[in-house]
Image (cartoon, rainbow, N blue to C red):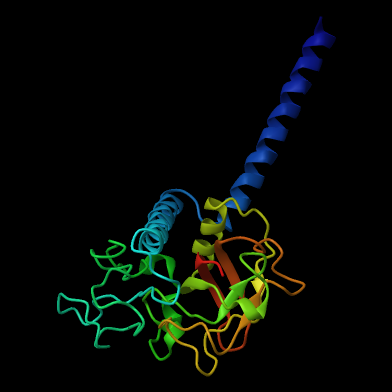
Length: 251
């Protein structure tokens, strides 16, 4: 009987040691990552942000399929000067001269896509990079017409670039949380050729001509290849950092 009791005691001691080791490992892991309320707040912000991007995508579909706007007539202009109206004379940013003046092709107008324009939340951004000195260092939503995503739409240069929503300079925690929310489980998200600063690059204004770059067609970036949205790590010298993209129109 005593031998059995000793065996049971030893077994319980071994279980306690294993549990203590597992707990120590968990605590060690949690020290290097966001946890608790901060993580919950980040996930909430990410969820709200992705829901908003889905609304922008729906607005683009509305102007394309209800208003019958071509992909060169779409306008992403909004009331950037804050005077309560969206001007079609170029006073507001991202003006597309091809877009009808009745605003039916404007994604951020009630007459068109019906989406209320909102800047991305600063809680997701690397604010130290948002100097406002360049197009891609703004707090605003960006729509560069210079890129195509590998295996989304055509990969051919002749078919033109995709219409992409870009949010530059996220912090790494937000980038990880976005990809996790989108079901992107791998970490091969690197690209080195996103056109954010080249000559002629700027907001979409009805033209897809000029510079062009196919993204994720290199040896890296396999986990975002063919994905219509995700967060990438850019390694280019002028734009190194984490950037979110969503393909609004695949061409």
